[in-house]
Length: 186
Image (tube, rainbow, N blue to C red; front, side, top):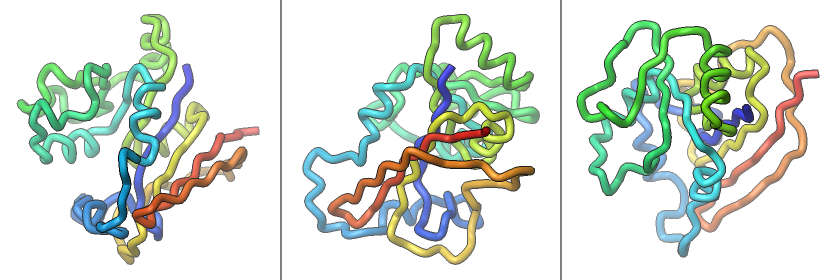
């Protein structure tokens, strides 16, 4: 099963402020830029995945947004939330996510055996976990033109260097930039 990440960070590599907030994403960059129908590749990316695996903190941030059905950007995508502590999702996510606390490799085998081929991996700790398992194949990082100075870093610690290659870079009218890498564990 292919596993890839698509995530936004500040220019200095934070996915959230120290309180887990991501409001800065909506105020960064050139707010007057004409983006037309440009969504920085998110729709195309979502069309390429058939399931999502996220961490508990990511789920809690999405829950706190209190999205209406019209704002829910995941459609009918199967979403699995990794958590060893939370067994039941927040009320506003009932029927939209399923909780999982077992072995991640077993989860991937189960998803693959059900016919799924491409998992969207979301959340800093979850992305780091998949890199440590050597299961993340690709990562797309969209950088917002803002320096937070401190916050929650995208990546945790690794035991070895992880080589990124096949770089593709895009720049958008709102001054955001995006880099996509393949992950090479050899």
